[in-house]
Image (cartoon, rainbow, N blue to C red; front, top):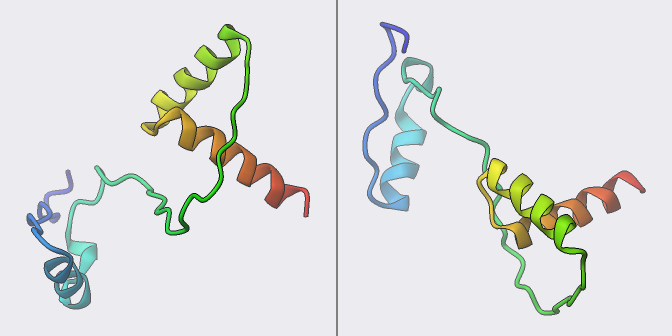
Length: 87
């Protein structure tokens, strides 16, 4: 941690977070522990059932775990990324 950096305060609500981000100089805080996040807003209104070889499913689960997300979200992310690339 940089000696000039302060630790992030504990924010207990969205309102606290909005107020903090709106008024704080974030360059003075240690953000090294932050990770990018994706927020899923759209409701899931359809389901896909897919049969896979066990080894492939285990590989998908391992990759998802390495990224810190559930494997179903990882599969959805792969599908979304492929569709964006193919445009």
